[in-house]
Amino acid sequence: MNEKLKLLSKCVDKYYDKDLSMSYFIGINEYVYKSGFKNGIGFSINMNSRNINNESKILKAAIKLKRNFNIDYIYFEIKNGKLLCGSFFLGKPIRNHEIYLSEFTERYILKKINQISAHEDNCFFINEFVSFLILHEENTTMNILPFVQERVSDDIYYMIISKYIKRLCDEKEFHNSTNVGYFEYLMGVH
Image (cartoon, rainbow, N blue to C red; front, side, top):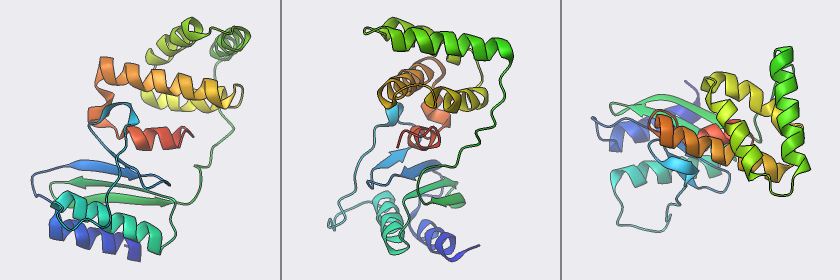
């Protein structure tokens, strides 16, 4: 276990409730995203506060670790009071641009992207495309979205991701099994 993980594990062992399981993603702006929260709503930790609970102590320690090691992003999972895994990231995720889609899927996606880009009021087409994404497993969608990101503006991509995550949370309770902030990071939104 490397030094950063040892420090984080020591803090978790000291402060975390033994019955609780949770995942945390701390973004470059030091916003914290917890599993179980919808729509990637992050919150900040007051680093100067002295009256804080054990969870806040762990998050403060993780933010200090982030600062001390000059880390951009931290993701860690705690299960039954023990650090299950931890990842430290510098910069944006590295994408594999060798994404293989079936010819039909690629043509359908390109058709939808053209419809979205061609219309000023593109909400209908974005919703239609999100419905297409919802039909797939999340792992498949994670391969489709980088293909989309390369072909649309950042604003349109963010709208697609936002609506996709909202639908996943509303229809499949995605936020209960996945940290939305971490998912957004993997999809290039943070």
